[in-house]
Length: 496
Image (cartoon, rainbow, N blue to C red; front, side, top):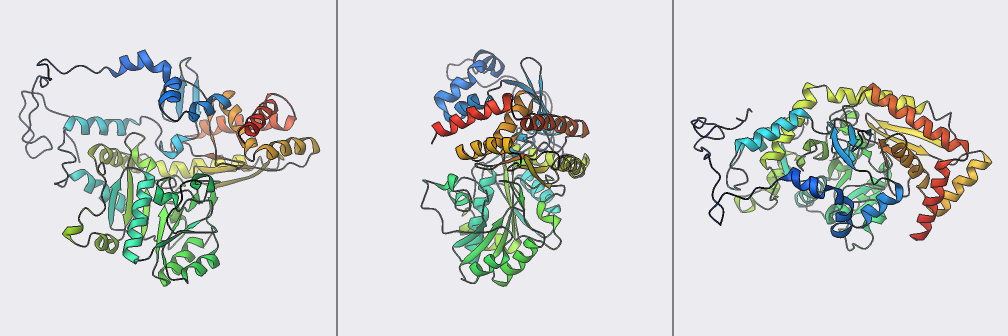
């Protein structure tokens, strides 16, 4: 669909187009005082107040975020970004291996997505009237479903956790059962329903009572079968590759789980919020295993193009028809900003780029190259225990070394708080090599790499060289890295 970029005041409206019947006036409407609208100058505001960013967060937002950033030296001031790179005020470039927790699948400010958003704003659509059917949601649903041929309908919300909430509600309603199974160590979001299927106690603590859901070990079909025999299970929700720890479902698990669920008239929900849209080298991660056809699929993050929040729950026709079974139930599940024009335009642009620029194939090839080069380092460094993942979702795990000197230092960190060594690697990657990464979860000695899907060989070279330098330093037994480790130990002890 081509959206006109706007019409001049003297032009006739486009017949049948989005601007049909509307011709903007040359002058803005008068404000309450009778004059023109007061101007809002965003650039001037940022120039005047941008330097206060950390103070503003400390005073008005989550005060622990700037505190944490100051502690680990992540309190950078980034001025601009493009693709897989940031630049600070001094012109130094930083390689982004985090992609905004996976949101920036195409990198930052992709020109196709930018143009789509300019176009949709200029079109001045009659958006969110709530009592019409705009074309963009239908077009985005149609395009998404071409990548999911066994699914039939889509619900659009605003985030990954909202996509999960939708799937949980739909599964419970259509099966008439209360309980949803989830896998140990899972992460599906932080709103109350998705928190109920979150496998990390640290996120759940203090927010009970939650929904009556039950954890089963990832890959354990016997445990799944035992729970299904109780007869009250609506669905199993599963990440084909868990974001926390980058743990992949064992071969055959998704297919076996699907067969068990169907036998017991329960549903399979695939959470592809982070793994979907090419992250693992296929459009969906569940497609790595033949014959897997989830009943409901949740996507978000990369679908936004990094601009407008969007989430989507894809499902089978009979599920949607049972939820929306009559006109009385037409709004039984809805979202105020769901299907808004900007989000739909961003999603359409993202799917166009994925198809036209071979992004998924690049994720597969570049991911294989990065993973193989990192795997080759496992035998070289005793602190490096495993490299795993698919496509551009890679986990680097550290483990107990063999040499006495390193073992005593490792024990010091573990006694203070598990996960500190991984943080010791993340910090010099940023401070010395200007590469942004993340620890894959609380109390985990795992770094997760989820860069933009557009990175290339030069970025792989830069990361591997920097990681090698950091590991050389760690194995030297001294230096700034272990000094920083002592700082982290003191901080961990103080926070107990």
